[in-house]
Image 1: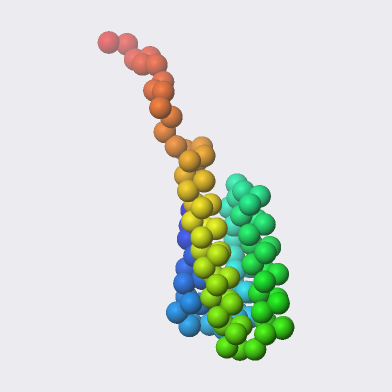
Image 2: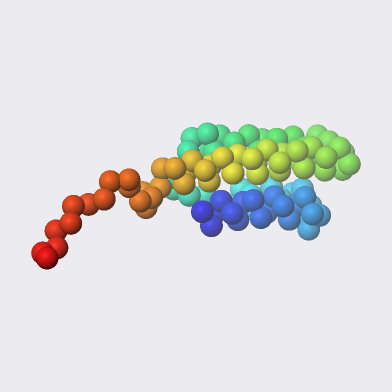
Length: 105
């Protein structure tokens, strides 16, 4: 979960104006993602990268910033969905069935 929180923190920091478009893209792409990340989340990261490339190289600063904020929002939403998915399928989630009591009374 820390890896996903890091991605959300990067998005929020960008939206707060802490760094520019190219650094935002670089930080997201170099962030670690969980080994158990879903295919949908990996696709969302690739779409983010493609969208950022178009924004950086094909749009002006003002329009680019606006569209990058929208890309950040989409990535935040995808990350939140991924967190929920991982919570539901976590190998550490307590099962509803309790193991039989093997202690001798």
